[in-house]
Length: 505
Image (cartoon, rainbow, N blue to C red):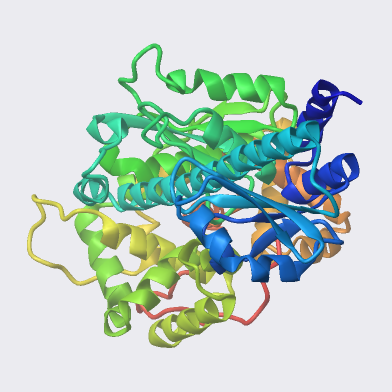
C-alpha cells in the first residue's frame, strides 16, 4: 500500500470512528510502531489513548522531552530508550500542545514517519472538533436555561425582570406589544433538534422563543411576537404549522393575541387549544374558548371572597404558596420537575396548605375552589372598587345571573342531541374525583369509552381535561352554577367537608 493509499484509509478511519484509540491501532498495523497520544498539557493530563503494546515506561523515561514539546520549546524529537527507537512530535497552534509518541524496534521508514506525522495532525483536528462540540453543547445548555428563565419571568408578567436577565443581549420578543403562544406537541427527542435548528446567533428564535416545557416532556412552548417580520425565523408560527403537517406525531395549539404581560393567560389558552388539536384530524387548533368565569363575576364581591378564602396561606412560607398555586393545576410530578424539587417536597408543602386551609387537595373540587380563589387574588385591584364588603360564599357568587349565564353557555356543547351522553359522563367523572376506572364501573362502560368521551368533551368545550386541572375546574364551576350539586360551602359561608379519595384520570 502506498503512502497516498495509507493516508486515504487513515482519513476514513478517523472519519468513521471519531476516537483516537482506533486511529492509533490502525497506525500500529500500518507502520508496526506502538503509538500513544498525550493530551494537551503534557503528562499532567496523562496518556489519552495508546495501542495495547505501548511501553508506558518510555513516556516516564522521556518526561523532560515530553514537557518541552508540550510547552512549545521543541517541535519534534527522535531518541532511543534502551533498544527502542522513539519518535515524538508536538501538535497544536498554542501551548500546551498534544504529543504523539511512536515506539519501534527500528527507525521508521520515511513513508511511515510521514504517515505518523499526518496522523498526529488529524488527531489534533479531531481533538479541536471535540472541544468545539463540547463548547457548543455548553452554549446550547446555557441558551436553553436562559430562554426558560425569560419565559418564567414573562409568565409572572414581569417584563422588566426578563430584560434584566438578558441585559447583555435582550431578545426581540421583549420589545413586542402583543404575542401569541404556540404550544407544540412532539416527541421529547425532537425538542432539542427543533430548538437548535431554528435558533439564531443570540440563542433566541428571531422574534420568538422555543422553550422546553419543564412539566410535560412532549411540549415545546413557543411565544411569538405579533409584529414579527415576514422573514422571522418562526414566521408567525407558519414553520410550526408546517412541522405539524409533515410529522404525524405532532400537534399544535395556538392562543389568541395577548399583551406581553399576559403571557400566562396566553399559555393557558394554548394548552386548551392543544387538547383540541390532538383530537382533530389536522392536529392544529386555535383557541376559541368563551370568556373566563373570573371575567363575569362581580369583581368586588369575588375578590372579597377570594381574599378571605386564601388568608390562612399568608402565614405559610412563600414556597408553600408557590408550590400550592402550581399543584392545584398541574400533577405533582410535573410541579416537582418545574421547580427542580422532589415530589416528597411538593407533597409536604401541599400538606401545609391543606392544614392551613382545612382542605383535602386530593379532591378535585377542593382544587377547583382554591384555583379560583388564587386566580382572583392574582388579578390587579379594581380602581373603581369601593370599601371592602362582607365576603359572600362561593355558592352565592355562582348563583348570580352573569355566572349562571356563563355556565349555561359553557356547558351547551355537551347538551347537543348528538352528544347526549357526554354531560352525564363528565358529571359522573367529576363525582368520582376524575377517576376514569371508577367512573367506568359506575356507568357500566369500559375505561377506554370514558376516556374517548372525555376527549370529545375537550374538543367541544375547548378545554384541556386530561393534562392539567384548569379545564376541569371550569367544568366544575359551570356544573355548580347550573345547580347540579352545591359543593362549594353552605349558606352560612362555611366550607363543606371534603372526603378523602385518590384522583386518577
